[in-house]
Image (cartoon, rainbow, N blue to C red; front, side):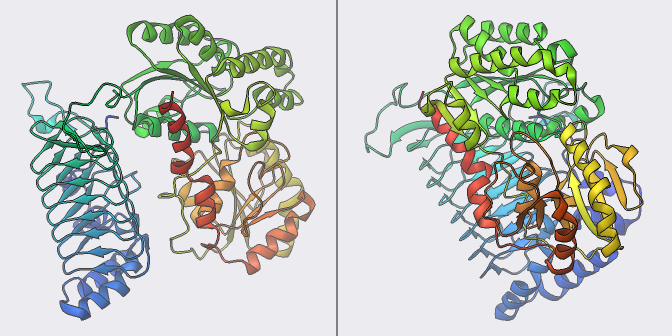
Length: 629
């Protein structure tokens, strides 16, 4: 993924505006005099203090600035914190003297440090609009540099010796007439598998994936992927040994396979998070692109024409793709069959050798099945819901869907029966599909969330008035109907009991004709996260629906109280203490009780929901099935 908007310190200081504002944007990344005053006061009182007193002060004061800090965390003398609210640190972590934790960026997630991590003296974690993730028990020696313009991820139990450089970004130098400094920059990121060791002065280039339990010799330049259990060294790097046998030998093609190549076909635009499908698709693509060569063909929009401004704004949301082909939206192409999409996919399949075709969502099964049959390549069908059943429901209010139902049923059934693997979103869907395909061909990947972004470890807001949040894409009839239900059956009763309450509706194309004095419609927003965090309560009065509701999962992950109908929380385990499922007539009472008595944010359900719906764990099952083919 090319990220040309990398933040530069020089550009920040050259912006118009006062010096104090520039400093705050560069160092703190948050607006507000009180936040700046708090940061300056804490750093003045604690950052320079030596000895045991300094360790004590920093252990008590730095967590006030950071996004989250676990138990027993030590901060050494002169530790630098930039954009500290985007830094999350686990338990039993040591940050030695003169380290830099720089989570700087306009739309990145920042730095995530797991439990038991050690960061040696003078080491630097430097984000330039990228993310750095250190999993549990990573040990980084002195004077190491980890730079990220997209994502650098080091799995658990990895040891980095002194002066290692992991640089997740690079400069282009195509034009000899233009200084390299002013040419494009790109970043594919770096992945380091668990249990390995990088010797002193190792340099790792952008786009490299280092496998599990790998040992890299001192001074090596790692410019290509390294397979699991390898011992490698040299400039450039070369695999010289396998740890599991202890024999010095060249690895056979079977033992050192090239990365598989996937052609990913999407009948919606996965860049723009209009819907839960868009959120899910982007997670799938970004995850798979870390491990495989990927080409992407997608159609703009998602049942509606694409928005060129939003497409441009979210162009960097998909990372690590070798080739992208954009097919303009048409009604015929989306709801029946796109010759342009099929032709583009066929041309790629003629040019390159692919291991899999990945057909994503609904009528994507038509392209997966047809291309698989034509080119003899297995295809994976990822269903976000049972598509023909969704058409049945929508036909009740949109009669134009009715004649399409037999066609959609045929496509879905044909695709399922001829797929190598079927990805289902819920256990109920998997049970339904098992009448068409053997159950062992089905991989369950429920709707998920990124636990480094959606979590309850943040400072609660004090709202006046109280905020009740409902969010989604209002092009979808079930979300529009939910606003109507709130308007007709909920808002007046709540306001009668609690006049100082605001109902906030976030999402594209809101039904403005349902306006109410206590309603606020924001329209589409770039990130729903700040709105979830600020809300006092999230509701989901959905009367019918399909798939799994992203809004409930993300809100639970943020520690919010959720009041939902059975349909609104469909497919989600009901054992979460922060989730209340009830009928519409009980919503006013439950909303008022929650606003009066419940805490705005609570961490009690987080570990359970992370284990059940965290993307990392769920998507690994999909990768394992692909790898065993």
